[in-house]
Image: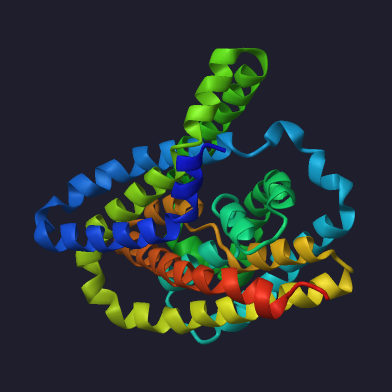
Length: 323
């Protein structure tokens, strides 16, 4: 990997914090520019997701299936244990569909992008995590509607309009994914395609920072009316960050995983897919979109702080090197 790109990825958490602060400053200094910021969010997310999808080895779907124990542990933690944990934590949240929907959207979807970098920083098996990302992406997109129906039911149906969700899924998931697959096929067959694919590897970190800036600038001024809700979700997110690695530790012992696999499982359990599900929150009607987006962005902030703790806690305390 290019040394400059490696440095950028290694220090991305600090860049994201800077973007959040810059977005808050922009929102306060230019409160009337909210609609302009908001119009820029969708195209930037589309570019971000395309650049992230290009880096995922979708053309090598068979790769993670060679390690069935890790894949089974990954499924058990992310799609069985975590939903149970999220349901339990949700009992401490206010009974407001927009808040619950935002929390469920973000906590029920395991991360498929910067979790790889944090896994590497935490001395886990980042290559195995990278190989498993297509599996995680496909399964979470298939199961998310089921989870929302199970956990929210009719309340979700009352605020979710199918058409905006379909448009968001097509424009921000299907089209970027199709373009990413086309880029990967092109890269396999020609040097220009390989050069384009290599260039896209520079995009995820700066565009994720840009999206965070735009989201906070657009919705930050509106959060003051919902501070009481934000304060209530922070302990839930903190509790999730504390409990989820313990679930991974238990599963790693149950499935007898190697050390690098165990650490990768811990990072997968603790890291969520906030920016991939953000478009779904923004597709909600009216004030629901503001509340759900605020809830999701709050999770990103809590998670970034947690990841800086994870990269030391996981390899040194929870899953230390065996003597």
